[in-house]
Amino acid sequence: MFIDEFQKFIKKLESGVELDEWYLTDFIDENIIKLSPSEAFELTSYVIGFIKNNIDSSCLYEFLYILLALQRQSETVEKPLVLISSPDFFEIIINKNSEDYIMSVVDELKNIYY
Image 1 (tube, rainbow, N blue to C red):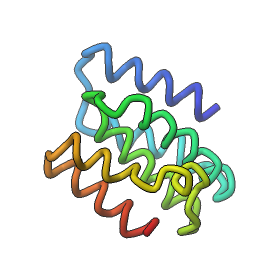
Image 2 (cartoon, rainbow, N blue to C red):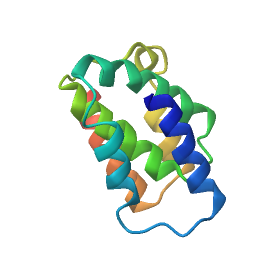
Image 3 (cartoon, rainbow, N blue to C red):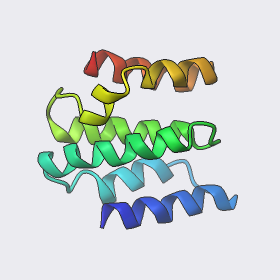
């Protein structure tokens, strides 16, 4: 269910439709908060893989923030296998995106996982 809703969310973001200021919080409240910690942990790998394949997306902030919400919901600092196999994941993002709003989420994720 999360993956389907995530894909719908992506289409909505990319469509250019005017979104209200709560669009990201609403997505998290409706699709992440209800997940069990183990479900959230499993989905972090999916979202990380998605980000790796869409690193140049104009929606990168939203993807990273969703990853952060999943990490918080998982209630663990255990590193997903996909991060273990890609230790430079966050550095690649940093090298491609210097915007402060993206850097702040990346810094928070790095502090949690490393």
